[in-house]
Length: 322
Image 1 (spheres, rainbow, N blue to C red):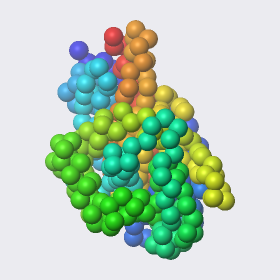
Image 2 (tube, helix red, strand yellow):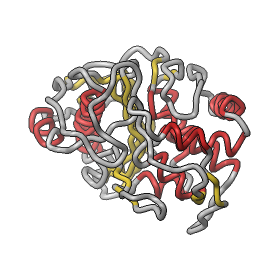
Image 3 (cartoon, rainbow, N blue to C red):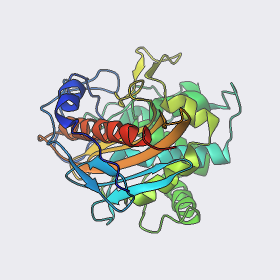
């Protein structure tokens, strides 16, 4: 039985574009003058998705471009849209970086983990205007938990590489761990070439990244960080601002944004939504290759707009399920 979803795109586009969007990974052309702290003005809305049934028996407002995948805990897959060929995923890469770090150096409860010294490379990269970075100075020390916040909330590329070097000695050695983890998860169409996602040679599919989302959401520390709209870290002059502006609305509780010229806009998201019986279900989704406008911020906004429309559609479909 096909469960129809009413047309919702126009109103949602208008509301989501009121959000501000911060930069994530940038590659190629110089981005608009933003930082990991201050969100950029929202650009024009992306094209409205068209409701499509992709074999799950549920009609959803899938993004009209790129590739997407959605599943519901206790229900299964709601479908996959678009050609599942490997494409650049930008800062969504940092989800695997976090998984490897937390596997090698697990944190429990309020444990902040070991202190880690900022090296010269991370400090020098902090001033790179072409990337999303967090301003840190050589010799500063932060806890593992602090650095995970700095990597996942404002999407600090320099922090992702710092964590990689701390864990494995070199980023190259760390990337080998990332690819080993991907193979263990059955992510056969995924190749990692860096810890931050800045490299366009890091590629994956929406279906593969959904496998990663399924794995990582079980980590209490990761879940707690990615649902934070912001955080104050001792030693930083400004508050971290989350690049995922969907947090706190429509049941959204995470996960990670990404944007670059090669990748377009990307979002791995998680939401808790009620079904017809009132039971709250965990919904996971990935949206890749969203493009509207000309800058990385524009692309990210398109991913956020279309993801929110998709999440709304899933919520309406779940309201008819038991």
